Length: 478
Image 1 (cartoon, rainbow, N blue to C red):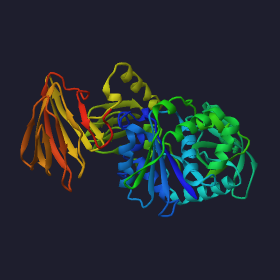
Image 2 (cartoon, helix red, strand yellow; image 1 turned 45 degrees about the horizontal axis):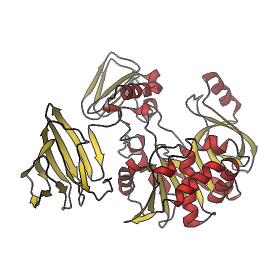
Image 3 (cartoon, rainbow, N blue to C red; image 1 turned 60 degrees about the vertical axis):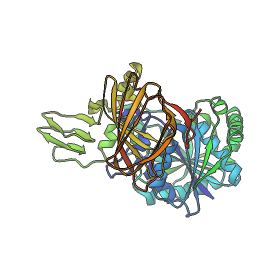
Image 4 (cartoon, rainbow, N blue to C red; image 1 turned 180 degrees about the vertical axis):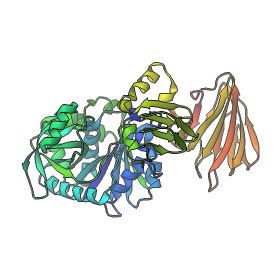
């Protein structure tokens, strides 16, 4: 049995302002309209029979978005979501996933660990590489995937290959190397014995647990306590397993490379012939778009005048460049990034400064995802805020109350079921209702199409934390 384990975490700070803490890189839409996570699910499903399962390890806050992307992929396989209360790097995530799979399937199941934010377009070559890795894993190997380097890249770690294991190019791992400087990377490329470390792995549950017992026994013991305290629950067509905060937060924040792969003597590497990108910067995103005659690239609405070697991404407004060269311009509804292309790796410094100044633009977009749908802030000022709210078919907001604001709802599409104090009524398109401050209220969509409405808030305080929840179908009542 083979089961893909998808690791979906990390903020993707080098891809701000599109990737943000509340909507990180795996949920980013690529030029073809699919998200990286959606593509990863489809790639994982290609490894399985229709009755297989796909595990996603992600933060609790990303569960509903992840499930939406899983369902959007329209897969026949079953989803199993393991939810972390906070980030603890790849070693704890993989250890808990392995223990969860052992409890369900035993030691012989083969795990294929895949980051959610990588782009691989040659799916056939990827599938062949996984088959090769699974053969080595069955021999008791911890297998990693090494990408054949095309350039002296300084943004990736490297793997130096050792003894050849088979005729397909599998070999032992001589050593792992941290991200090198340019001269060292050129030497690695020339030597021909180094591969980029892709961060993908393949091993049986039994082999992984045996090696963790040998090289990271404390981490394994803590992961076992965490797993035992978090049994999976059947919720519709998915398994949901929520890791308890008190157990998981005691685990060491460490990568699987440091915790295990660099210490074990049974590590093998499979050379990956497929195309691969970790989409680690706007330069990587730019490479996905066809260039014009002046090497300008654009995604969205953009024009270039007397400009060369630029990348422009626009989510809405027209972006026009005039007489510029070697720039990255990324436009979103509430933020614009303008950077020199050779500083693409330093965009994280912008996010750091936003955090330090407590600017919410590091965390949220103007459109914010919720389990029930989305809301978009259209305009706000002193004592008022206007939102566009979209509620998915069959979804419902919590039964809640606000101390400091009243709300006026105008339905523009669909039908709303509104609880307002003791009164429950249906509000049709082009009708409205008023929710006074202090009233318990709930908004539901009883229909089969999206409910779209405009909400006008007014009051002394309009922060999102002015919510008292009484009931919630998504478990958000504390």
